[in-house]
Image (cartoon, rainbow, N blue to C red; front, side, top):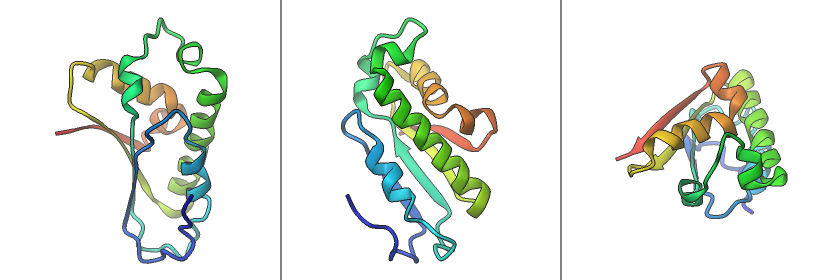
Length: 125
């Protein structure tokens, strides 16, 4: 894990989870304070494994309750950063045959952010 507490000149932060766990992202983001005045954008890449996850309407069943809960905690943390420091969130994934479902997954993994229009969901070109 890395510590963002002293990175007060940081303008953009990009997180690329390569595994199911996203707890480390939440822990890193909790170190952000009002001293991080320059931070304007946080980007989170959706992990590749999601493209190969078969879901019949239930992402929690495909990922497991624990993993889904980690994403929901991350969702609340990102919403708090938006509300308190106006830090915008981007969710990204590489262009591919799964474009349609990845946007849906992003909305399921970050439901509060998506519902309130606090997140931009984009393809990486």
